[in-house]
Amino acid sequence: MNAKERLLAAAVDYVAEHGVGDRSLRQIAGALGTSHRMLIYHFGSKEGLLVAIIRTVEARQLEIMASMAAVPGESPGDAARRYWQGLANPALWPNERLFFEVYGQALQGRPGTTHLLNDIVDSWVKPLTAMIVSHGFSEADAMAHARLGLAVTRGLLLDLLATGDRAATDAAMDKFIEMYEGQLPGRANPLS
Image 1: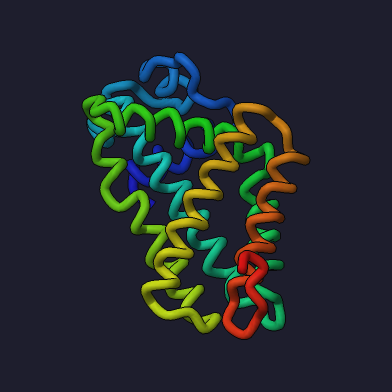
Image 2: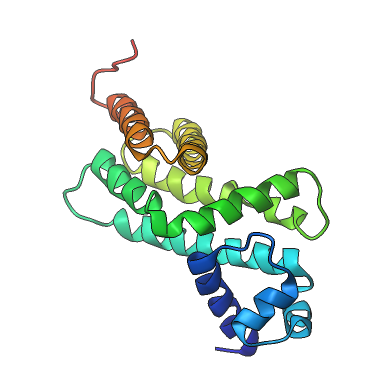
């Protein structure tokens, strides 16, 4: 692991444990045992570091999702419920808060954050679409389901972070999964 990878790994762990809040790049660097100049050298700015942290966390979540898809005999709904339980884990909330904070900044065009928007949807839609196609959906329908699933998941995560109401967000996710399961080819459509 090179110096940049070590710093990034330490930053991901630090943010997961402490969040970022109003900490300056110097404060983050001090907590990581490095200088703010080294962080600037490797990441360009505080925003660049935050985007790198988000991308690392997103990549880990995609790996978890991919490994969950391979569980034999598990229904798509049960896999989705298990994945939601992992995402809704309070230990991940600092990373999720950071995601939404920087995502909002990127949408507003804040310098150093806008490149977060590159592939932030497609990086999820592509593998989700492939998983959904494997359950008998056409490519076009699978892509629409994937985008919808991503939007619902991100929306419920934002709801959970804002309200802390785990029971309500779990119930909403379960209702969404039930609706999705009803759309699986060969099943009766509960919406018709």
